[in-house]
Image (cartoon, rainbow, N blue to C red; front, side):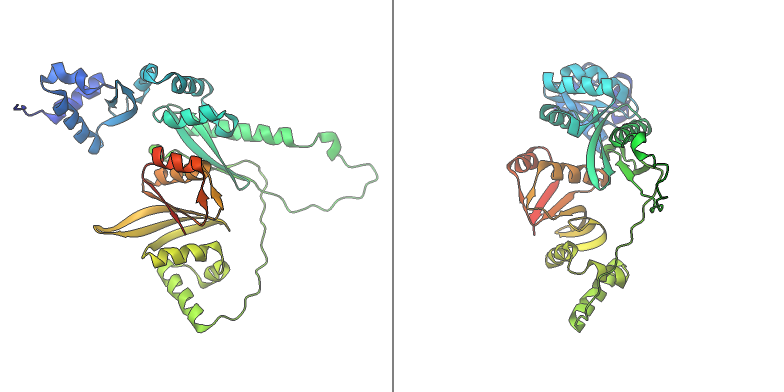
Length: 343
């Protein structure tokens, strides 16, 4: 069978006018097979001119042009019952805190990628995932999350009466002010950069006392200088990181010819890195999450997956521990493009 050529610009115009749609919706306009129409739509997707949904009609995804996302709400009826309920809940509430939802809703929120956009929040060193309705501006979601955090903080604060000093009580010396920050990272698909928001007006600066260092042999100094030169890090920073989880990670990467281009030590047991992995076709940039845990759960992978998608890079997860059964299942089904290695 001979197929007549299809004008891509004409197909794009039809998607702009009629989308979201599936290939069969254009069959009458183009007078050709849906296979050819699907091929042209795929080309437009690869060029970034057309987007494709995860929600499907009869197993076929929908195609639409950027700027017509609001029309996707009309296709929520094609979700399965459980996913649709989660989408309707999110549409009503606008923002949902993942930890407050039951396990079924958590899974559904990950399934409805067209309607639920994840936000990662760091509060007092603890990471929490929020989900926002896809049409809600990130700025509004940020304001709502911060409001909720302040309300939680107010509920946990002691009553005013308990904080009043007794009439004859000696004045108490003022302590150094404390700080609490919440860092909100927008969903990967949005392409936004992390938004820093203050949860409290106070600031806290703690200076850790530097441990006494012992003399190192010449061989160790040479290694430190090599790493310093490669990463552009000051020698003092390398000394502070000596004998830490970072060194274990660095050794693994070095042994596998993986080059570190940048890194950030979040805590003693968690590091974010950007690395170059050698392949047959040349070096491939990766976002790397290194986490020191005996048991890595699905939440650990989920958090790393969201961060990695935000960088639009493939994800490498390093850990000396083992994955839980649920984490293994979700790695195979949900976390496409993530590689987990045990160090």
